[in-house]
Image 1: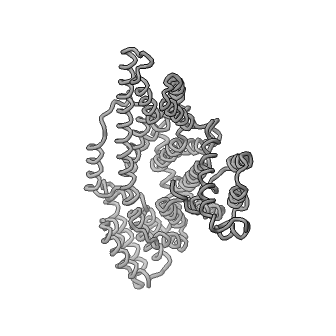
Image 2: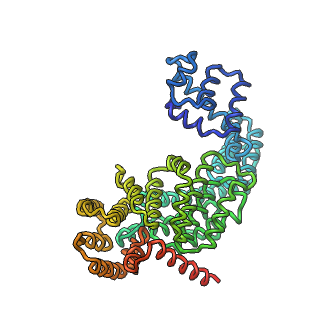
Image 3: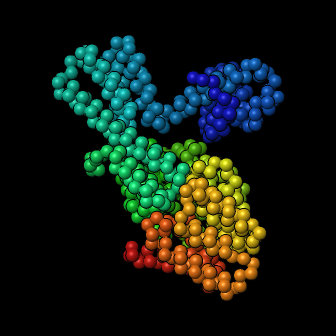
Length: 521
């Protein structure tokens, strides 16, 4: 194993829970480990010293020339003790240990002992449906059979051959499905939602070409889970929220039917609730959104779950995102802003935990919330964070709409001296990204034709004209998808009827929620 970089060691040690730190400290002491290793562990976990120089200054007995080897040793020891600590919780770790022991016994010709250990491994793997580990067990069983020491019957040989074929087929299905999933995720992170027919056709064709044939009723738990995730990703990607809602329900229901898998696939279970909340928000299923939100909040109360730091961070991330989304669902932007400002310090730490994709999405949500509350200066502040991003090939759709929304925010602030420059800059960016649709063209033309000499009556007529133009796009299969990023229709109606954006959006949200609840009833 290559020697880990200092940052890798620090990241690993900072990720430890209190109980893990306590266990490793005791094990280091129990084994009489080198005092220098114990001091290094203490420096990073208890003292939380920021870097190597600070550690060397605090502990002068740790020599610089030995430091690299000490860190590598501590890194390996930490992983070893973590494996031991989680052994009793993780059936996979226990199964892998059995497989390792069986291989050692097989190499020594102790076939009966090897068979006993493999039988134990088989019992363990049956509880978590780990197909890859099951295949490893079957391979070792075949090697034992090949020695002819057990006098196995023809039926037993046939059974193991059939099981190998069945498990191999299931693994193949999951690999094919996960390949589709990885490809869809890559496209989504790069481009965002599908807004062109040719792109939509390309994705549909890719799925048709690569999706394995299946009978859903005969699929294993993991096959069904992977299948549902592919469909959820596809439907969210193409903004088919009814389809996404259907398959996220199947995803979560699968865990409800097999709760024994929640401790084994906790991350996937949490992600399923997250995707279900997205679909419910987009479809204005307010009551169901609240119920799923409560379910997400109660995840850490599920017995025998043992959330690690990574899962706790993930849970916090999704709870924060959907707490903010709840204000978009109801149109209560001022309340959402109060939450954001009340939790400003926590949210700063939260953003540090996000990847670049999630960070850009989060910035855009906050900007839209300020825009909905008519705080255009702060909306521009958050939009500028996106515009200043160097990596513009990530979520190109949000980069494009951030520039449109920023233009309108500056218009609302009366920054007419900036408008011409921003329009040219936005045009260039949209052309570069091949994302100049009719929606953007109408808005840019509207802003370009405004001047300080435009009278209030003329302005009202232009608002009404733009409103009529954009209304023609709402039912368009692809142009209409632009309204998901920014509800410009409501903004225009607020200007035409001299009301706040929040009032208009909130009124529409309440109508949609009532309509949805009536349809469900």
